[in-house]
Length: 471
Image (cartoon, rainbow, N blue to C red):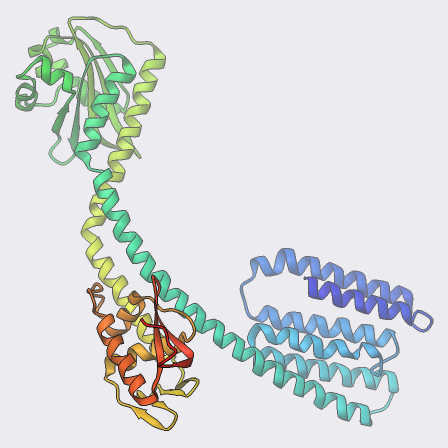
C-alpha cells in the first residue's frame, strides 16, 4: 500500500508540473479512482482473497492507471515512463518470472497503444524500439532475482517446518505426560468429594462414576471424614446393590435433589443411607454436554439441614464443573491409546522432511579452500582429496552449510542417525575429533573449533595449527 501511495504521489506531482497541458479534471478523476482502488485492495481484496490470479489483476489495473497518467502529461515520451520498469520489479516479487514477464508484456502493449493514440501512426520509432526491449529485459532480470529470492524463502520455510515438527512432537510428549498425571479420574473424584462438602458446609460426601451400559454406579470415592467416622462405611457403600429411585431421578432429569430424613424412605434413597443413619441428603448429578458422568451424595449424620436456592445452584454448578473435568480426563485417556500411533506418524513426517531437506541441498558447498561435492560426497582442500567416511562427510556437510556459526550436538547427531534415537554420550565428539584430525593432516591448519556450550564450528578461514586455540 505504501509503495502504491508513493507512486500515486509521483503521478499526481507529474500531472501538476504539466498542468498547463494536462486536463485537470480527468487527472483528478484518475487519482481519485486509483486511491479508491488502493483502499479496496488493502481492506477487502487482499485480506479475503487467497488466489495468485489477484496479482495479474493488480498488474492490469496498474497498467491502465500509469498509461492514463502518461496520456494526460504528454504521451509515451513523458518522464513518468520510469514507473513502468519500477512496477515490473514490484510485481516480480510475487510469483517471480510469471508476474514479471506478464507485467512487462502488458506494459509494452499499453505503451504501444499509447504511442499509436498520441502520435496517430503505426510506425515504430527509435524510442519505442529501445524502450520495449528495455521493459522486457527488466522483466527477465527482475524475474530471475525474484525467483532466486522465492527459492531461498521456500528452503528456509522447509527448514522451519522441520524444526516445528520436531518441536511439536516434543511438546505433545510432554503435554500428554503432564495431563496424564493431572487428569487422573481417581484424583478428580477425591477432589470433588472434598470440595462438595466444603462449599455446602456439610461434613460428608460420596462421589461415584456412572456406568451407562451397565446402568450402575462404579468406584465410589468417600470423603476422608466419613472413613474416619465409620470404619465400615466403604464396605457398606461398595456392597449396596441396586439403583434407588432418588439417584435414578437425578440421572434422568439432570437436576439436584434434596431429601430430608432419607433413612426412613425405603427404596427412595440408597441402601447405605439407612445403615449410616443419614439425616439429610443432597444428590447432585455430574452432568455435562448432555451426558452423565456420575453422582455426588452430600449429607450429614444426626443433624438436619436446610439449604437455600443459592447453595443448591452452587452444588449444581460444581457438579457440572466436576463432570467437565471427568469429560476432559476421558478425552485424554482415549488420546493415550492413539498417542503412540500419532507419535510414530509425526516421527515419520520428520524423517520425510529431513530427507526433503537433504534432497534440496546444493550440489557443491565451498568454504575457503574447502570444497564439498554434495552429490558424490567427496571433499577436497585445494586440489587434495580428503578421505572421509559417510558419517564424517555428513558432519562436515552440516558444519560447512553453517560455516562461521556454531552447530549444536543435537543437530549433528540427527545427521548421523536418522532413526530418531536419543543422543548418546560422546557419540558426536568422537567422530568430530577424527574429522578434525583428517582435515588438519591434509591442510596443516585447524578448520574445526569447539564453542563452549554451543557445539562445533567450521571456520571460514582456517587457522595455522601453531596459532589455533585448543579445543
